[in-house]
Length: 435
Image 1 (cartoon, rainbow, N blue to C red):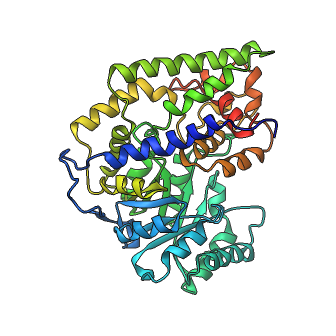
Image 2: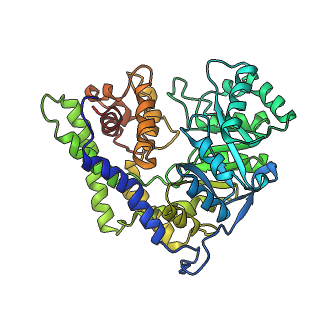
Image 3: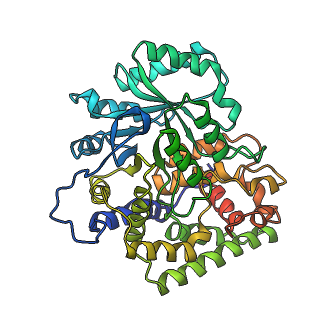
């Protein structure tokens, strides 16, 4: 592997991405009024219609789940939306364990199939039935087309033919689509807004899973408005873009130790990255934004305030994290939350590479898939999916972020948000490749 991750570094990622945020959430009081809800039962307090499906889903749903006991506790607390996919390692079997003995109709389960080389009806049917077998279910509520990068992919006839047969058999009730943006914007017009807009007009997709948060709104606001008009159910992901500030520190320290034979352009990219980080640190201290839990609470309340959102998928790995999210159910953004989010946007927004963006990619002379690499880095640092993220990164065809080490930073000049993306890509390569 070249080198091993130091104990300090490994523990840092676990503590910062899970412990710090989880502890902050668990200790936080909820409620739109800011009143202490410590005595309130930790249960879901709001259910919303999931578009034209007619199903009332909990305002907070289950996204990445690594433990069937935590998922059962979530069900007991009233969470009734589960997002999974064939490519999520072990997730189907975790859901199967948690669903044992539970009324099938009480939970809305969505799983996803990516459009791969085999686009035949038979191929999709085989994979869908394998997913049902792993879930140990007779049916799922929604089968989504996973991450189509182009409008043309939405029209894959094998997928729709398989969906028609599965619906006729009672194996699937609704169709859906998820979108992370393109792998790489070879065609700049193929944005998340373009793809999901086309999916809405297509009429065969009843539910969307999409990225939206208080820092990433320009495209997603338009899609959400369209979903409201078309009565398309919406589940959100990537809603808390705050695993930025502290999780960068150790990467900077590790990379600075490599001072021998470093290309000047490599050093310049990291220098801009560190300067942005240091400016954010000063801002955090000055404006008392050190409590990541408070900011994360506000980020969740922000998306809960959109009437076109059905459910917000939460990353829940521990009972403590579950409690923290349950306290937010039924709440809305208050004045103090708004002030914190605005301050965070001003001071730290430049450290967040927007999910499903890719605006900078056409300027890259090497064809580095910036959006995709930063998504894999998010899996590693914020979701604890280290092995999966490293495997995905290793399978990227063509250029990866090691090409950024000797580049003049064309991506940064194309970023409308001032993100020091070259340095972030260099750090991501160091993490994901164990270089």
